[in-house]
Image 1: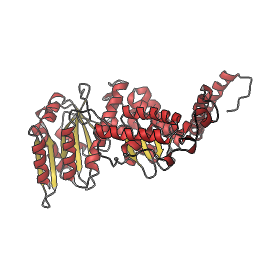
Image 2: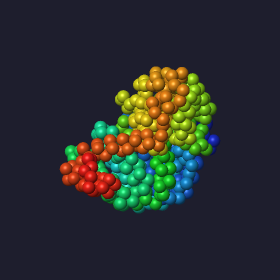
Image 3: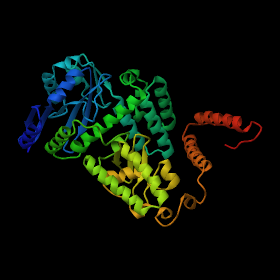
Image 4: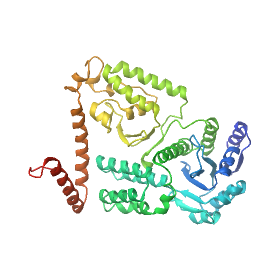
Length: 456
């Protein structure tokens, strides 16, 4: 099977790649090193900063993906920055030294590597330092962000607290100034239970050297950077991380790269929880399949919903069509992220989501529609509350039992904010509670007047 895979890759690649491998006694891949001519050229142009990501296979093998990083890299498309794939025989000093030496042998520009970004739990640091003595090895901002997200979900925090932490994390990663990092550090200290705080390694936020390697990006550049890496790591997991056969996983991954080398990323993003997220069952879709699925969803909305409901949901679907989204499956709920705050979807009928749109209208929002699109499903009647079903109401007035107005919109916004503030006050220390309560007291008095007793 390994030899068949190698022959397929050599035939399908338009230019001869660098491909070294060893086969075990059971005809399985033992080691694997791959680099196309294009990948070699990319590294030769941008060797200053390397980003290394590890993807684990169910069989216990580990795929090392090397990507170029840094201010000069302006490559479009997911995996366009990938310059090397390697599977070591073992993740010990000998196996990794051999892997790095093969990479160096075929890439003379390795001597110009100045920075290597890895995940915080990258244990073979001595081997890496020995093979790249002139390079500085640092934890990557992306991996730290994914680590924090995973911990937030594992802690099973109150939903308002979890939303505040995820939102603050996202905004801080896109603007990693010393002040913003300090604020996030303080927020974690106040919101995370004291016995769990050491496991969070929040001191990473105060290590300025880590963030200097990331801080040069603008907010928009940071957003695109995290988006690109989220897509890349999801593709790697989709093909290699979920397939027991190493040979089949690598064949599918490299064939996919060959077929999509000129296309921009079309799916995946975000800040999904690392340890609570499994890849979607659906393979990466081509544009025709996506258009067909979206057309079917539009038809189901127009058939099942009332006119106003269909218009509201089609507006949400339009956002899904123009966005990149990531679907992650938990035990009972589905995590959806569309370049915004993470929300929880309950797929069992009637489908619900934690976002503002679904909470206000009880209609399928962009997150529910993204889940349906990714699963190649359409809206079903039992996923909709009865009052929105076709033929039950003529307009929004009848459904909402009152005319929709700016006042109602403000009321919903204030209600959600009040709930979040209340949850934060309940879970902070007594000292922090007194400080926050005093701030609220002053704010209420300044708005309503200090001579009225305002109940907080």
